[in-house]
Length: 283
Image (tube, rainbow, N blue to C red; front, side):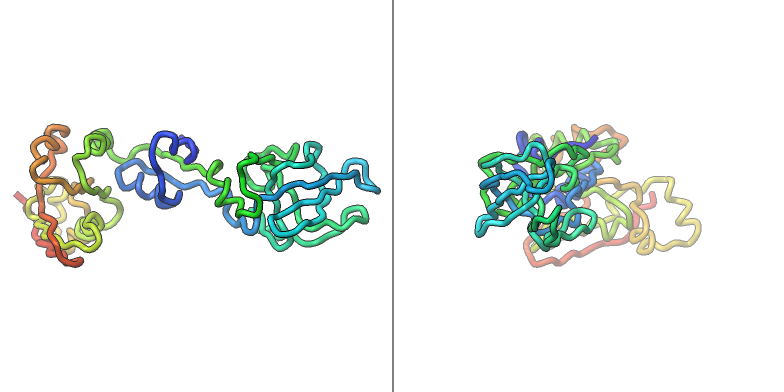
């Protein structure tokens, strides 16, 4: 499912940039991917069409005066919907559009044109190439297009949840029962555990507390030692959360016995010191 980040902001206070937002969603088991339709876009600003005249040598072209917040530029435009006093996305000479197209000063049918008044297709928003994109009057002339209005079009794709306990984790978040969480992704359990420890704090983790799934027992039979095991495999652990120990009984009630949580350590003050017991409980 593809959703607009601007739409999500109607329900949640989002301050993170899109790529970090996608990482955060993935970390709780909702695999997400940032769809950057503006990749490569550089130098496009909010502009204002101050005047428009017919092109002297072409019936389908207009000669516009565009203000970029500092000075006026002459731009030849072929869009039928361009009009005086519109707020528009203006790509100045030297700007780069998605796909690597760099704007240069050119002549169109004998009239000099400095830059481009952009359509939605030229900005890679969608395939509508019928006319320029007209922006709200609230957009401040001279501001960077992406910073001022681009978030309206930024999207993330929510992929199929990677873990069957996403519902439980979201309930814990809803009731403010967790203080941090991390989905155990590729790589071993030992290194992934470290990702959930808040910066600036220390931790004492005893992986011996985890009941290792029987499916991993064949590794022991093949003489893989505990340390190598914990740095290569997740050992059946899919998620790590930080909680207040007083809430553990309530948190435990959200999970079925098959996915029963265990306390494997504690967070303490101290700067980035992690004591990790890497011995496996094979019982």
